[in-house]
Image (cartoon, rainbow, N blue to C red; front, side, top):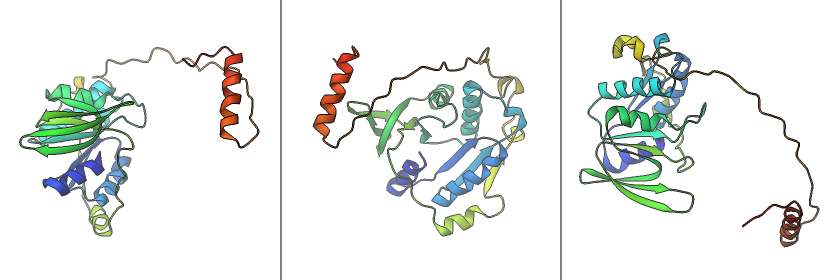
Length: 225
């Protein structure tokens, strides 16, 4: 998402602001992103926001984005690396009442609208969306640029990363963090151990290996149709 944002800035101008909601230890990650060349980095961090599920997290992020309005495009990753729910982008768009699209690989800015390319398993789709919209960038759709020395030095300056607590956002504490999270974990069930049959093909001929594998699957009653 950061790489696509910087690419759009190079093509069309504008500025790039990165927002993350995380513990204060995430500041180092935002310093790295500043080193890539973004204009501004904001870390939303407050004990009040701890324990948030995706609903409370997206609400907090949406309110932070509103505070930065106006904006043209919101770019998010396809999913987070911790829980991989892929909820946050869609929920932010719902709070802000703007369109959204997932699995996007590229964006063009036309006259007051976006032309968006989306990659699915068996097809590539082209959409046009109004401005503003939220775009969830597909995983591995681009290669992030390296950190530049000049940007890295700027990132290490005092207060390069802005820290926003609830003093800046002034959100109702019943709507954020654990208090604002309707999700409750009732029970955690361990993954059952499943015995697996192991067989190994010895050889280097690919066609022979495929025939061997198909024969084994057929004997096990596995249908490939």
